[in-house]
Amino acid sequence: MTTHPTQDRARRRRAALLTAAVDLLTQGGFAAVTHRAVAHHAHLPLAATTYYFTSRDHLLAEAFAQLVDTELTTTRHWITHHGLTALPDQIAAADRTRQLGLWELYVHAGRDPALQAIARRWTDGCVRIIADTLNLPETDTRVRLLYTTLSTLWLEHVVEQRPLDDAHTLLAHAIATYTPTTTENALPPP
Amino acid sequence: MTTHPTQDRARRRRAALLTAAVDLLTQGGFAAVTHRAVAHHAHLPLAATTYYFTSRDHLLAEAFAQLVDTELTTTRHWITHHGLTALPDQIAAADRTRQLGLWELYVHAGRDPALQAIARRWTDGCVRIIADTLNLPETDTRVRLLYTTLSTLWLEHVVEQRPLDDAHTLLAHAIATYTPTTTENALPPP
DNA sequence: ATAAAATCGGTACACCCGTACCACTTTCAC
DNA sequence: GTGAAAGTGGTACGGGTGTACCGATTTTAT
Image (cartoon, rainbow over all chains, first blue to last red; front, side, top):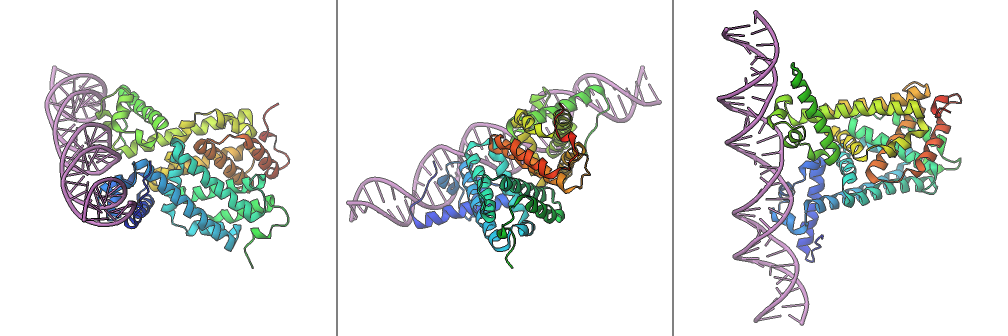
């Protein structure tokens, strides 16, 4: 069971541990998130980690959830400001290792039911963003197709460090093929 | 440096260790591939692992390479026999945890340059298969788009255990939209 | 036959891990 | 104020890890 402190300092400490966990996951990946490393990174004693989080798995789960949430809001903002076609630029600009940590946890969710729910929230959120910007329902085939394309392009770039040269072409082609005629929202504002 | 034995029994032992590593990766994921577990699973003493593989990383790299190669030939066979549209059926039928291990290593390649080369071989191989079955060059935009769609559908199924209900619909739509008019190869044989 | 090289396998080392424990201090409710 | 609850932090335990070491054994080359 996850502990939720009532005192102010305690809440701040818990949050510090969480961001420390996210940072470590970003920098060193999965294996780097240990009790000792998290505690040290948050300038707290070792026992703080076991006090605020009942286990390492719970800590990782919450870190994953936080990572997903911030990531979703970030990309939503970017797309509403720059349009779908500019998404490759955001991918290229984003912190690569951070995205790596996100994907690491995502795949790990395949073996951990607790993480799986968060993983679903993650993809659902991405699909919803695309659906919203295209003014289409989430279940629309074109939305799903566009999402799958973007997802792979992103993962490929993060893992294999491929240049995103053809991403723009690919994306433009996909949008042109998929979207209905009246979708100004798919384009960046003038 | 990777050791390549000259004697027969030694070669068999090395191969046994490798398949043991793949098995363990399949069953328990990344963390399960330890020297002791691999040795025990291959019915060999602990020291065998360090004798045939200079480090755990090298062992994992070779396991990854082997996993990728067998996976590529398997899917190539399937597609030539059943067609592209039947791919979701193969995905559904395949050993889920095995695919999970593959994807785990793929993402991990983002932090390990040695694995990264294998990861590229993996995606390149997938793209090539699609290009071949569609009689299109690998650089064709439609090939790339089809690949990205398939890739995400696959990963989603493996990680989130989503039903592949809409995969057929999605795939059919994508193929209909993308492929040129004369591509009988994309359809299953009558 | 014999020396060199390859292989084998048992053991040991140093390290890091998650987590439990517990005496201590601070905060809160009344 | 006083007792209960919450928070704190130092330490310890049991266990698993990668890898090095080294004498014994087998294979190969000559």
